[in-house]
Image (cartoon, rainbow, N blue to C red):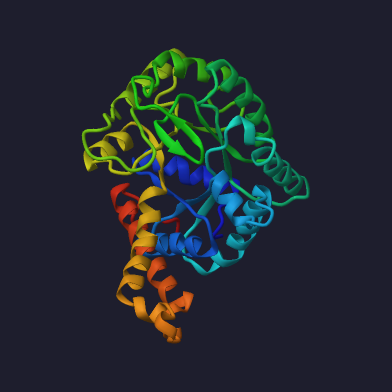
Length: 340
């Protein structure tokens, strides 16, 4: 069962929360980066999450049409086949989808999974993300209610981002300022609108100073201890301990202490994209620089086929990204936790 069923995905998340570890959620943009992620999980003996952003899906759809749904469906179907060769379990997820892209991405994908479930099959994706962080919280939660109902009917978990994450991700950007911290009132309004599981399961991307992309230490002030305040503030009202399953966005550059605090306070999923992009590209750059005359037909020469063959530098790229995934598993304490 390399691609998790809805029941197994729920089990994965419950186990992560109970044992205080999190799954790396790796953004992929090609069959090769998919294999790199799967390989990294397998080498770490960790289950994990594979995710596709709107930009990633558009890229996967091909530059002729740039169709996000086609790209996402194609890679998901490919993953269902190739993941069977890896001795781990993964869930398929779609990353950040803002309001203006819902009709061209998440809603059609929900419909596809609903038809699969109606026919007695599992959904194509196990979770989808609604990024309403650019909207007012009222509008964000209203759309979240609609999407959660559709997701629950299709046996899918919804991820919601209720307040901004700084930086830029696929065209959605927010300033780095004091608005990057979710309040207890924000969390209470979320629980009131979306429930605490009775209306459908969801993951919550709360903000505690998170910033997408690359940043140097000192430029961003992360406060993962804030997640404990949200858990306790909502939990005390509803009589439910640790009610939220949190997602850690903008984790690149985080310290081990910050990650550990986030895990202790209910983070079950942490997104990785910037770091794995670099880990994939760095070996390619090294190969090209070291073999400049061989990969180019310089001064009328013919180059060296074995050096510009995409398989040559592609293998190094896959290995580099897989290594970064195994490091993420170690940092998030998921190493060796795969379902037996």
